[in-house]
Image (tube, rainbow, N blue to C red; front, side, top):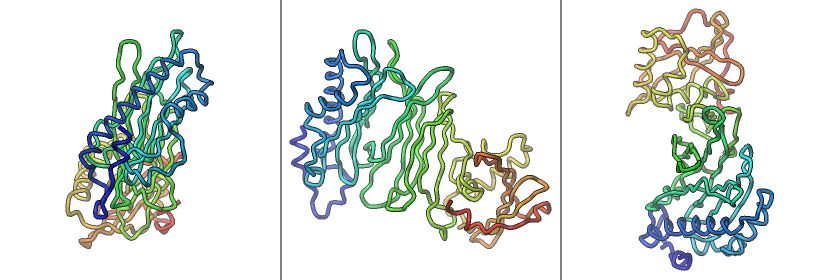
Amino acid sequence: MRAVLAGIRLSADDDGNDAPAAARAGIPALRAALAAVIAGHMQCSSSARPADAAAIAASLAKLLDANINTGDAAVAPYGGDLRIAVKAVPTMAGVLAVDASFGIPCGQDHVLAMFERRPEGWRRILDWRAAKFDRVSDAFGDFFEYAAVPGSGSTRLIAVAHDTPWCTSAWSRFAVDLIAPAAGTAPQTLLAHDTQGYNRGDDPLPVTFAATADGLVIRAPVPSHDAGLPLQEGIFHYRTSGNRLERLPVAPGRLHFVDAWLSEPWSVASRWSAEGTAPKTRAALKAVHDRLTAKGAPAITWGTLRECRALKASQLQMKLGDGSRLYALIASRPGNVHAMLAITPQPDRACTGPDFPTLKESRP
């Protein structure tokens, strides 16, 4: 199978985004074969302990001819440069994760398996891989991270985040999956899925992933609604304790928060509006959100950011491409947590300053 994939070559005019027929069939077959070989090998490693992760990785790599620095990914873009990594999963006692990755045009694909140590041996509790490979963006890309995160009660869930590779643009999307691992007779279950746009180019802002006490945080370079500003850091803080992916209103600055508020659907933006907001004010917020996120919406340039001490809030001026102005009133609290109070066509008289140049908030 790998030999067939290794024989596929990209023509000079092929951008690599669409998979040829042999790869459309071969990559899903390779994923399935890797998952089966890994599971079979773990069954034969019944005496191994979680502390033996390095030894398991070495034996799997030998079995699969992996972790060899041959440079074959450049020569054979489909299925080359096979890598095996094995490590214990923090906060899940007796659980090992096996990550098998291989090259595809403009990125990587991953097959993730997790095994729980039982008296009778290793039991697979997670088998996570993409289903199809019609385009390179179907792969679980080269940005690939996972962690155990809290679910309801004492339940531990698995969060997997990955890029979607693409060959002709730095703009891409990453996906986050929240999975309940197999337990007893219950199979693994996908509980929630989210996707977000970001820039996977050469911008100095890195992509980072970290598990938190209430879920996970991904930081990634994202665009601003103000096209005149550079890429900025987007903070995607998800709470998972309710067995779902709930993005929290966390942003490195107030301007960033308004950007994120406009980037999310109203179902999320509504939750990011202050609790207790009057129905009339909430309806007005929805009308503004609908207007500024609709196709053909006017361009936005950020104006002044003004302190409103009497309201314990800040007000951001939004200059629209149609010549009008809007004023977003934002409440903030420690931890970079924010809430949208109102967006009005006139500034609030309680906002008397001082003013802060918004460019200073555009990139921490």
